[in-house]
Image (cartoon, rainbow, N blue to C red; front, side, top):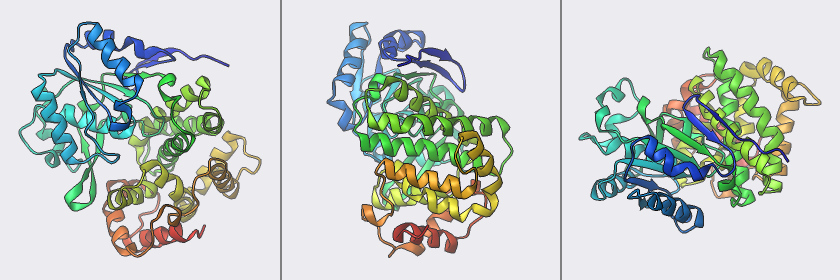
Length: 387
């Protein structure tokens, strides 16, 4: 089994390889962080990996605090609580440690610790990001423990506006973490169903980036290779959670997806965001379920690109139909539910979901500019299993 260890600096400083979490205290020192606040979720907060990270920092003389008051889909209230913990503990940096929720929450806390405006004033609309007091932002070290969102290489956080049941994207260029640790050993404890759902999220990011109509050849190249890594290594990671090569390559595929999707996302995310806000469902699982239905809806605009991708992947049938069959087979192999009904989501709110989807920022990157009625129809297809 191949052991992969490397450093690179795109789009930020990456430390990849088994055991690299041991470098966390030294990385804090490099960033002049003396009192980091480690932000994670309640499930991870009780696990040895978090305790070890906190103790390692404290053992190196750092005044490390711990905040874990976040939900699976982090809310504005969670961010506010994290800012209070940061200020009360007189911290000077953030360690965002965990899955996409912890990473997004940690990055949002790092943004907000020096702001006087409310969080929603920095929603990724127009030039809202210019309102940020950059001098007040905290440095960030990101430590992903799932291979899915790629938030460790992103300049934004997805935060739920709970009173309005809407997911909003908070953006600023300096929300990009200064350093990332991709340590596959931290992902080995993930159960197979979470490995599968988060891995399919990585696939959705790479795939929607590839299909987005904007011109960004570098992102497109990254996306194609990211999809290949998912094809080769996600089944291995699900079948054997201790396969460090597969775990490493899935962490890389996840980072590649989030690097590529600056080219754009699309209908999967335009639907997954409102469904996550309305039903508090797992984001990666939603994308995994929605994937074939959105692909089929976009067929006329993406078929030539999918044929090229199919050739690169070495599929037996290098065609749109062959690729769709591969997606369906992969989902079956990973035991991803086929319909939204399987996770308790019915079609009674189809019109509302359609309106929310067309208003979601991700809709702007879809290859075909669907209207609310078309998004409602795709949603109903995903509820009822009509591929």
